[in-house]
Image 1 (cartoon, helix red, strand yellow):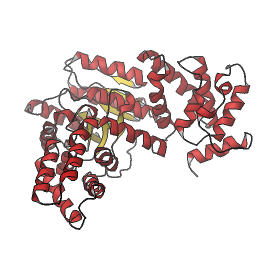
Image 2 (cartoon, helix red, strand yellow):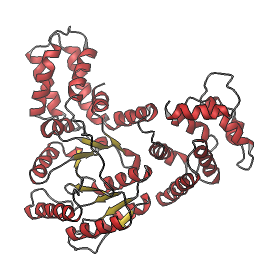
Image 3 (tube, rainbow, N blue to C red):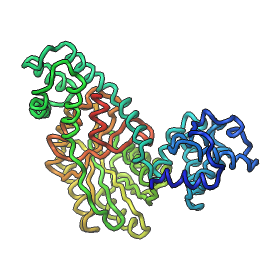
Image 4 (cartoon, rainbow, N blue to C red):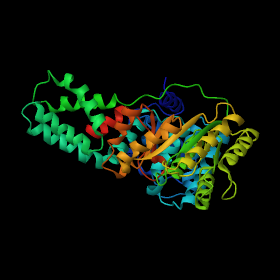
Length: 437
């Protein structure tokens, strides 16, 4: 029995038997939403409405947030009530509510429309519901919106080609090749993708564009390697974050820290970029906002020494996850690449196996430059995973397929905006569907 089913069964035991089919929050009487927090009857009415509701986090929040338009005591009462109903331990529930309140204060959010989606994201992570259908649907919608520029460049032109072509001849394949290359899928990747697609299309009747696009989606989804299953090391797990200037590395670290914190991990953020005082300051601010520990030394300190000392602190204070920032180095600077190797070597001597993951952050808006960065970093440093940022602001999102196919490095997360909720796990099937569907 799934999480939602268990909770619904629990609620129905404590509520009146449902007399009608499941209803949405919009069907509930206003009196349920408008009840004063001091009136204990609101809890009874709300529990009944939740028991009748469709078991989805978004629907529960519709009920919970009726009559709430900003942060404040009524919101904290409602959240505490929901977490109690979900059998979250009292200490964890109080911690969730207090940290969310502090987060809103820090971010300057007051009105519900400013933070509602972030609240749902926090709860999905805290309750381990990110893989539930409701959250998958929400992610797909966000992915589709984020890829709108790339989709307009790619899908619209493919639709046009299919509508005007009478057969899958050489002219058709040449134009399709041009469309893919223009979306920054790249020549090599496009050639391989079409070579895979041609046999599948050979027996396809002309005039079935939907089936053609389905086959293209399948082939595109197949180019993305699945991250290998690994047994997590004894804590702390150390992640080294690398990439060139301007790719969004600092905010990506903040979003990763946020995800781990919401999943209950004790996180230490390490300011390994000692060349820029602003980088240290910015990471410190985000560490505080996400409730993470922070380790830094003065500007100009040796980055390898900073990483070494940070591992000492992580072990002494029982941190479970360590995120190590590095300078936004130009991949053509040999001395800086050597420094990166030194950081990895020093950490490995201090803690065998560290860093457990080396993650390259790439900016999708740079198109084929992201491909060259992957190649040059990969020659010097073993890359375990890739995070692709700024997919929401580019028509060049096709480069993500090119990187996956050529370098066989798993893409684990994608950035779809500036908010904490906008760093999401990558799924090849969803990407292909959002791009071409």
